[in-house]
Image 1: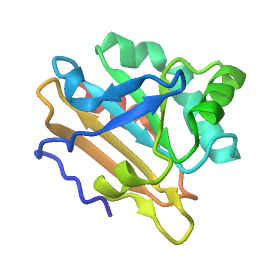
Image 2: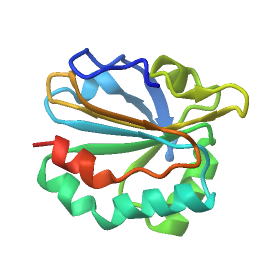
Image 3: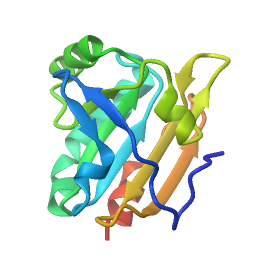
Image 4: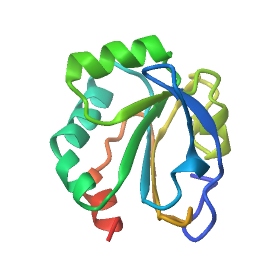
Length: 148
């Protein structure tokens, strides 16, 4: 299960997005953030989940949320995946699994992130967490609902 819990301050991190630009979580205070950890770009279940976020992106936007997908893939793989699937949200490269480890969803046996969604409020406090195995999809409608 996740080592992050509802009510705690979200652990800060800095990762690079698909455009190779640094994104620091703490710099996003002032608006809600949704972190979506997933195993791998281009895999069938991950593609389905992230395309589901794409399809519901206006609901995330209407709540003022910034959404990030996070996996061990490189910035280049993220760029290709985002373009192929026409994703609206940014993808962050956690190639060594350090942030997934920090959030308690790194699967060392397979060297991938498990499926973890974290909703963080404007003050940096975690308001929702769901942690699934790599084979079990999440319902992102729950994350949208957690945004208030």
